[in-house]
Image (cartoon, rainbow, N blue to C red):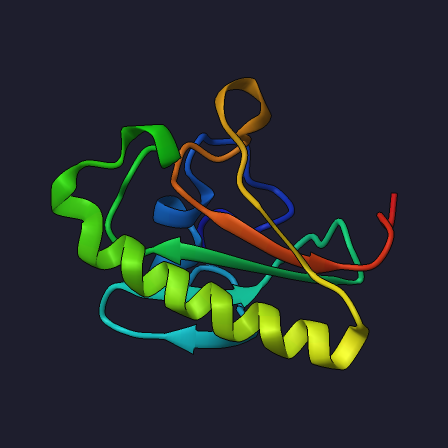
Length: 117
């Protein structure tokens, strides 16, 4: 096996590791275009990541051609955020840009609870 989640030092964990099945993922949703799974190194007690399976750099680089995958991601986030809210009383949806974006691949975090660290 190549890069592991905890050892990874590249710039696109999702293309380089997660989408190549190089680390075990606890999946919440998967289709031809979208994957949602529990973060491999969670920052919150509930921490789900939603990604497009095609490479898109970030939220600000989305193009009109990316609309179908973005709409599917929004539908997935709506469903999962409702589930997290029902189970834990609250949820947040977050994406990062620029220097806040550790992995240079569009992704959204669905989380609940106080930071673990």
